[in-house]
View 1 (spheres, rainbow over the protein chains, first blue to last red):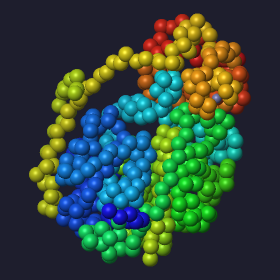
View 2 (view 1 turned 180 degrees about the vertical axis):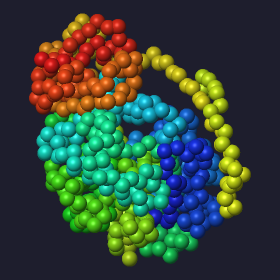
View 3 (view 1 turned 90 degrees about the vertical axis):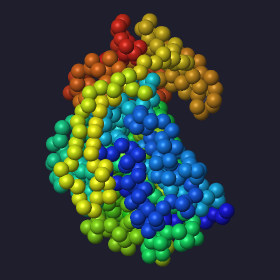
View 4 (view 1 turned 60 degrees about the horizontal axis):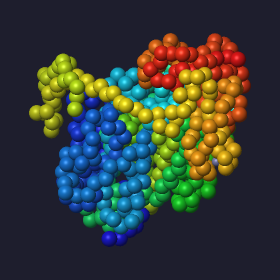
Length: 400
Length: 171
Ligand SMILES: [Zn+2]
């Protein structure tokens, strides 16, 4: 056993869709894993030492011990397996856990596969109820709250405190959906004007329909390993620039927004997670030292709050910075080039892995030229659960 | 697992599949409806006294004897000090700190399902408390503003969840 900085050996995913009518969750997972194997140039999984299942909801999937089921489905028996769950942060927490497995020397290779069927298998009302179970059931859910409402109350506080405007977050909604048009796996690319977003029907004011991210079916897979293992087992690895998974950070915050008072406009957990990850990666000025980032745009305004908490804009300046194009494809730090949760989609257990896949492919220089960030060397993912009750930041670097 | 396996929804049989489709033999799809209903004997645990007092139209919070922080909603244990808290009664008056106007109901229980939309999810700083209490505010939308005075309004039910023995109104 030996430990070294983990490398991204290969990646794969399904198309992200509002409903994969012809696939149950095992089928989706299988497709993502087979695509990852094809990406690796490997014929089977016999050399892979460990599996890690990433999914959030036993309620959506109606199958407990799904980690074992999926491990079995993809032919990983009798290798060891672990299931990771952390709400919306599940996929990123899964990769963070895989990082620790590799760093500890427990294994030299680990297949991280994430999936969820959050699409139209249940009604959107049922989906909202099931998601609300990850809020405080006794106090927030039973009064009639739901996530759109919690986030809406947060961005309203941000608007009041800093003068953030609906046009600012409409920019995010339009930009990310436009960028989804350059991503072949994206669920719902749209060409929208700011006016289109502002005029969409109210859902939980100040959020309108087009400020809200998607419910999705999909799966994603990332094979992480030591460099030596990848060289020995993964033919595609030596064809590509080496991408290291260099740092990971994680923070937490109260379950209920009200318990954060008077700090209800921003995400303390993101500050904690980013602080840890930046320190580990030697980053002191993230705006200039990070080239591409996938931010957790569960709602359009969340991206504005995130750029502040990740140190990419001053407190309260996220709105104007976003609206000025600082985070557009031709801006200082392009974000959500994949389309984000708003445009690519968000099958929960796969979301953090999809974000990491976008970063790896950006660093490899392999995405559609319309969204490729030129010579991207360092990328970041930002993923959270609840209203950032758990937050994870993962950082990847190309080593030339 | 399911209470009922009822009603075939549909079967899809593709007319043609691509020559290079490795799943060509697996493109037929059948969907069915699964229904699963659950009922829980759900303990409100150490929050219970809040709801018992609410029936008597008293609004309770808890205070930490260590750091003096007052929690509404109540916490039985102060997470800062790990001290067991004391129940304290508040007047039920407070200030609106932020809110959202919801245009759909998540239907978490019968009380929520009965709400007319749009409705207001309000975060209120009760006088004497240090945290915000989330609940419904029944007030005209054009009256809403930061810092507006609100108070708890009580009712005798019947309600499905005892949290709905109260809501906020403009004061
Ligand atoms: Zn205390």
